[in-house]
Structure formats: structure tokens, C-alpha cells
Length: 71
Image 1 (tube, rainbow, N blue to C red):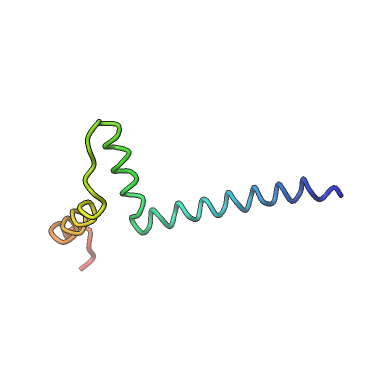
Image 2: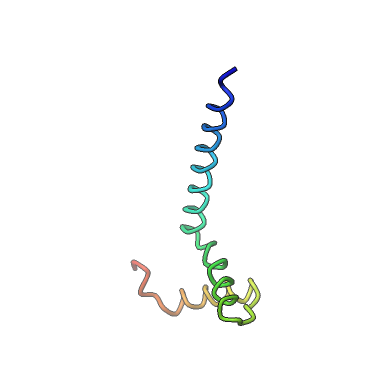
């Protein structure tokens, strides 16, 4: 019956790993950019644009500023 603390430790490690993988995935896909933008607006006391407008702006920036592209 001493397995409970070990199970709790294993769950803690597993939760930590999944959480880390989730953060990396959000960074890689650009999903975290929205959260960063909203947090910055809150700090500056500015009303954020809608999510749709934000994504449109990001797409326009990528299209017009192609230095990040390889070709």
C-alpha cells in the first residue's frame, strides 16, 4: 500500500511533462502569440483587437515582411 506516494509522484512528473509539451506546441504553432498580445494590452491598459483581426494582422505581416521565409 506504499504505492500511493509513488503514483502521486509519477502523476506529477507526467503532468509536468505534458504541460511542457503543450507550451512548446503552442509556441511552435504561434498560438501563444495571442495570449502574449492580450497580456501586453492588459499591462498597457489598451483594448485588444478581436482574435480574428489579430490573426488577419499576423497573416498580413507574414505576407508583406518575407524576411523570415527561406525562399
